[in-house]
Amino acid sequence: MKILLTGATGQVGFELKRSLQTLGEVIALDRGQMDLSDLDQVRDVVRQVKPGLIVNPAAYTLVDRAENEPELAHRINAEAPAVMATEAIRLGCPMVHYSTDYVFDGSKQQPYVESDAVNPVNVYGQSKLAGEQAIAAAGIPHLILRTSWVYGMRGKNFLQTMLRLGAERDELRVVADQLGAPTWSRTIADTTAVLLAQARGADQDWWDRNGGVYHLSSQGQTTWHGFTEAIVTKAGLACRVTPIGSSEYPTPARRPSNSVMSSDKLIQRFCAIPEWEQALYLCLG
Ligand SMILES: NC(=O)c1ccc[n+]([C@@H]2O[C@H](COP(=O)([O-])OP(=O)(O)OC[C@H]3O[C@@H](n4cnc5c(N)ncnc54)[C@H](OP(=O)(O)O)[C@@H]3O)[C@@H](O)[C@H]2O)c1
Image 1 (tube, rainbow, N blue to C red):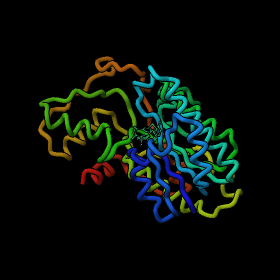
Image 2: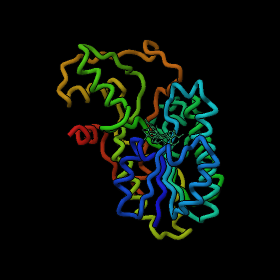
Image 3: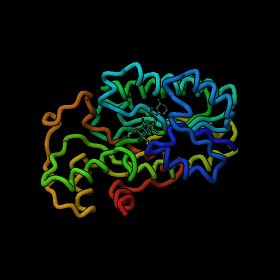
Image 4: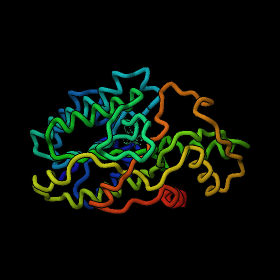
């Protein structure tokens, strides 16, 4: 099977390239080969590759900058996936797409489940939700995997920033009133591979029963402050980690105060997902 993988240079895309290897021939494309802001190019590349499966981790992920570039964020996160889904109809191929905890507004006191009402509070979340809706509306066999607080050893992410700042400074002041689950990019990729191994050769009935939206986040929950404390401890850094409120660290985009998601649906149907702290320790080695 030919697997068209977008965003091969991203945190999740890079890991997927490795995790999906045993499932087929992975055609891993970067922005230069398939620019999601160019919808004609997206259509042409899919037609050229003729994949048996599309896996789309590429996204406009600059949450704050999206407030000033709503059209670009929407094109990349909603219109490009819609084009891929339209092409998937023609090819009769399934699609795996990634979405975000930021489709929720954070007002729930418990972990969010897949059937909870969505209500994004920032442009990025709105654009990702529109992408989900476009794929669902296309009526193709699909998996939409919502994840959260993604980090890894490569690319720009919270872990890398804290490792750098923690080595430079005596004190890190970090937001302690947003709850979520840091998720290692490798956890996302490996779990995707487990799901796809089960979907391999599956008929429409399998997709009718198992397709749709799943939450794919580390188990457990913490705050950005708790995440930083764990990073500093594990990395053996000497700096102090001081909790602050979101009001002391204003950002252009609002963030939900609770974006913890329950991954129970995925765990019950497919496989276990590690605790966030275990995964962090594995990632840091
Ligand atoms: N990062 C998070 O904290 C987070 C949280 C929740 C959900 N998610 C979702 O998880 C998925 C994977 O995210 P990630 O963490 O792997 O993101 P990432 O590390 O920021 O990678 C994004 C990828 O998308 C590519 N990309 C951006 N604009 C593009 C364009 N116009 N055309 C083609 N490619 C483009 C980037 O290419 P370049 O390398 O060229 O920039 C990069 O390969 C996304 O759907 C994201 O929305 C992420």
